[in-house]
Length: 256
Image (cartoon, rainbow, N blue to C red; front, side, top):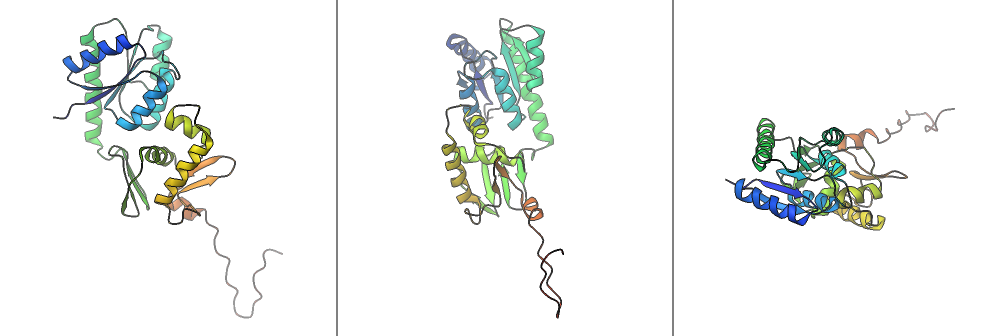
């Protein structure tokens, strides 16, 4: 049986080390680490873990924000492990999308039991809906779980960044994303330039568009950003052809 993977997000090295040891020895999980919020999002995209164990007080991006971003992309279980025990923190975490909240300093057996419960619920949900992470339309099939893409029936090799970009746009069809927001969601950092985003969009278009110079799938909404347009939406937005004049009639010149 394949070991289930946990992304452990904790900024304190000693706490991170002790948690990892316990999870690997007592829970037999494969553990990957991230020490800040930005690193956590990058690791989540690359690893697609089975569960996220998340601290709140993180540098660069709070655990609340990380939880919200993860929930926008996936239904993976998120268990918050924090020193903050006040009700307000628990409510905020749950509203951001956390599945459970555990206060640090408690029983390791309780934490393991809550992790097992979260994974068990996720497995049950996945078995009821095995296609929940597959997007398919008339041109594109995107398997978010396996990180594979098929365009017009042909497999397309995408880089991790290209896949992240396309999967984000596909999950919000028609909604434009500005370059700054795309950089923040994909890399979890503020220092990525607009040119880097445009460079990746250009390479993605070369791989999925019939004519990358006149894109129909990943389109530019001037003044707003980039958006994914499903084939049916693209067709719906095309202007209807002008009626052909009947014999003996002058060419159509518009309303009088």
